[in-house]
Every structure is written in structure tokens, then in C-alpha cells.
Image (cartoon, rainbow, N blue to C red; front, side, top):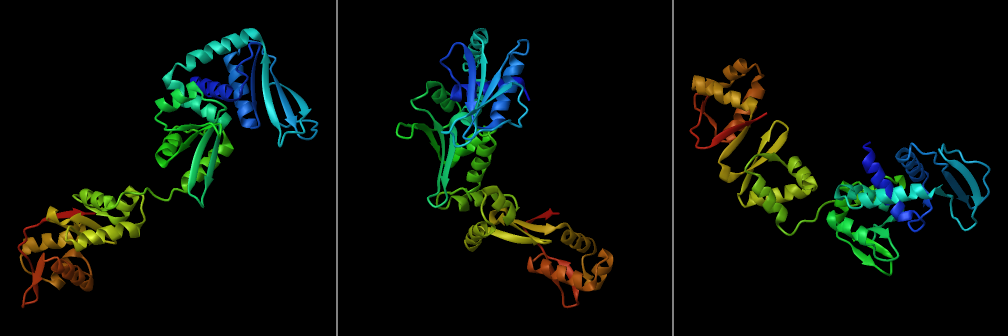
Length: 344
């Protein structure tokens, strides 16, 4: 991965859950092992020329003798009976490093290109997800005791609408459009549990809700070209039955017509003056155009198909008023004023 985004992510983590007031040490606290390891690796790479002497303090509600995590830093184990589960503090005590780190932070928070990555780190540290299927409530929150000017600037720049709730002590983000933007920004990229919960929440959106008649109008506008009902359902993220209901409405109004091409049904607007055919049926028309009048048996032999198969295809073409059969039992082309379009 590009190293600059990783630095920006660590800055977001530090701004969310680091000690930003001290001048003597770089610290970061979290209960997610992956975040601690990520922060440790990134800081070690930034200051690779230094002898860091970093430490990780592990606090657990009960006594533990050792921890099976391959940290780069020295590990110190403690008991904290108030803790619900183990948490970790990464610390480097060196004033000169803290000064260099603060300077880097100042540069990165002024770079708009780094905003998505800073937000990823900030959310990994202070973000949480709340949703209830019963009430259809889906909310992303970023905890903050008071308003945070930098966080507000980042959210505004990225087009994320939000409100600060003093009672919740958090920035609150709701609405599918906003949540889709957060998904595109990979807001939960750093935190495995939040990643899983966020995607589970997004999956509860079954479909986009359109205004009345919106879908019907959009489908009609698209049908200047042929589409199957399945293709339309996928385009609008709707069920097949919902799309077919709109297509039936349009057909009843004589605005669209449908043609069966092999095993699929394609739809097109009637004002396009088109008849849709499979390439196989088009061969029947070409044969009749060359020979004017032909029997079913002759056509079957020429196209190397069975008699019954040829007869069925010819009857389908007759239904479309493209061919007709005379009293002598021979088929011929009809005069048509529509364009014929072949689909595979």
C-alpha cells in the first residue's frame, strides 16, 4: 500500500484516541489488536532511523501471564478491573519525536487528498454503527464530546451531511445517500468488526425507493433500445415482478411491445416501429426473399431443421405478420413497413 495514506490513517487514529495534549510522548489507545499493530508498524516505519524504545501496555480485567501477539514493542501487562475486555496503549516517550510527529500532523490535515484516509482512522477510533431492523433506523456516529472543527471540515469537503448531537456527544450521519458515500470512502477499512457491521447494515437496504411513476417513466425512456425485464430489474435494483408490473402497464397503454428471442423476452417502445427477431428466424426471411414461395418441407431441408421445428418458427413469423401461407401450402413474405432488428 502507498505509505502516505497509511500515515494519514494513523493521524486519524491518533487524533481520535491519542493523547494530543502531551508534548513528551506519542500514545495511542484502543482495544482492537489490529489497530494497535497497524499504528505500531506505521510509526516504526516513519521513524525507522530512530531507536524508538516503544512500549505496549496491555490492561485486562483479569491477570494474564503473557500475550500471544507479535508486537514489535516491549509488552507490559497490567490488571484493570474496570475494563470489560483487554485494551492496549502504544507509547513512545521522546520529546523530539513528538515534535516531528506534530509537524507531520499539521501538514497532513491541510491536505484535502488525505481527508478520506484521516477519516478512516478517525472512524476506526471513535466511530460506531447503530441500526434496528424493526424501526429501519440506520445510523453512523462519530463520538466527540464537543464540536471538532477539523472533523466538520473533512465531512463537509467529502460531501457527508451530518449533525452534531450534544446529547449523544457525537456527529450523527444518516440516510442511504450519505451511507453510500461512506461505503465508497471505505470508512470502515481499518476495523474488522466495524467493517462487518457496516456492511450488514447496508445489506438491509432492499431497494431504492423511487417517487410515484418514476420507475415507469424511466423504463419507457430506456426502451428506445431493446432490454429484457431482467436487465431492467438489475439496472434499477428492483425485483423482476416489480419491473414486469410496470412493463404490463406500458403494454396496456400500447406504449411498448415484447418479443420472445430464444428463451428471453425483450421489450421495446412501439414508436420505434421495430420487430425484434432471433438470428435463426431471420434466416427464414432471407430464404423466402431469395425463393419467393416455399413449402415447409423445403425450408426445413434448406435450414437443416426438423419439419415440426420449421413449421413452428414459420407460424411465429406469421403471427408477427412477416410471412403468410397460400392455398397451395407455400410460404411467402408479407409486405411490411417496420424495421427488423436481429438479436443473438
